[in-house]
Image 1 (cartoon, rainbow, N blue to C red):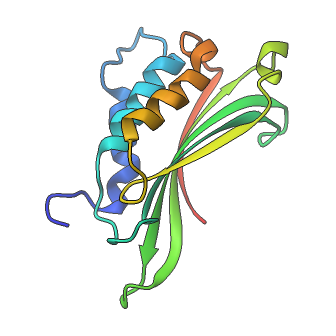
Image 2: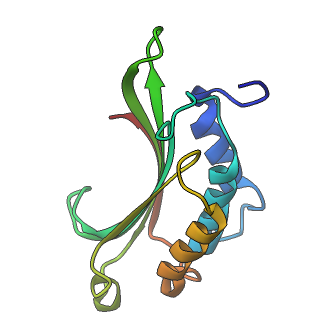
Length: 153
């Protein structure tokens, strides 16, 4: 697609969105990360013209990925990477993980996940609004950690 950034640039775009509006003295809140992810999620990248080539994943739960349990909100963008013949080769996921110290009210949220696919699902604004509702009690909190990374899956 013309005028669309390459998939290899996605992590840099997410980093730039997260950094925009931040100063050295501004604490990063969940709201700031969520707004950055929404801007990132609206930007279209040069993907294959298939319904599952560009997806957004919102998920949370209490996990011990880093060795100790943390309540984790994982905001993910998944791209389908195709080979030279246009066939599926693998996926690349770009993550923005927000981690919080475990608390009873966060543990009570349990776990949740929801997908949105550009070119397959209608209503990106509605999906964003529904996911933001799931974040309501976290929006003004400051995560203990924010991790941005990319991985093939």
